[in-house]
Structures are given as structure tokens and as C-alpha cells.
Image 1: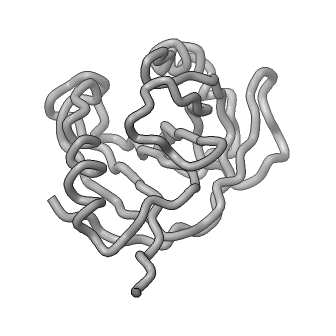
Image 2: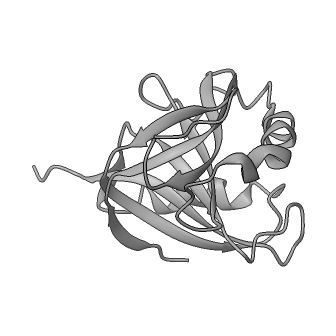
Length: 160
């Protein structure tokens, strides 16, 4: 599976966030609190949702206890109307490897492939920016026929 390379332009997001780790995963709790309220966001640009991970520093792929902020959010045109209990996030632009994934959201083998096979054999390094998945119309939570785009922040390896 080869990704497409995309340069993301800055995006404005509104949503909810929680601090968690892979060993203390609260993703379900976060989305259960966001989904019933997402219609309160009046200035959405589309129906896509962002499942985003924001790390304080470099990602330690072997550390299941590394904490990060997980966001459930949508893209908006502006921050003029923010529903109570929700927050804003400005997703900075940059280069991403985008993997079109088809399969269950509970199957982590795609991430094992990305970080264990594709990234080490590519001309790129992991960049210290948010990671996210775009959940569009073909996304079905836990369904083996679900589709989503996985966005991995990258930067070119320096040539020696």
C-alpha cells in the first residue's frame, strides 16, 4: 500500500478533546460525548470528522503509555460560534503521507505497516505535528468495509 503525498493547508477545527494513551485508550468515551453534539456546530465546511492525535513532543512508537490529546472534531469556516464545552484547534499545514484505509477501525495492523514497514523504508521521517484520520461518508465504526484516510505528518530525510 503506497500513500499519496499531500501538502495540507491550515484548517480550523472545533470539537472535544481528552488526554489518553494507547494503554489507557478513551477514544470511545470521547466520541460518545462528541457525536450527539456535533450538530451544534453551525459553521461546518463539510460532513467529514477528524479523529486527531496531538503529541507534546516526538512520538515514541514503542511507548504505549505516552500521553497525547485525542480530538473528535469537524472543520469550520471560522471560530465565531463555539458551542459550550467545545474547543478550537488550528491545524497547521505541512506535508503528509495519506493512506486510504479500508477495514475495521479496531484493526491496528495498518499502523503497524505504516510505522514498521512503510516509514523506515521511505525517504521520509515522522514529523512532530498532529496525526489524524478523516472519517467521511464511507466511514462505519468497527465495520470491515469502513473507509477512512489516515494522515501521517512527514518530512524528507536529509541527504548525507
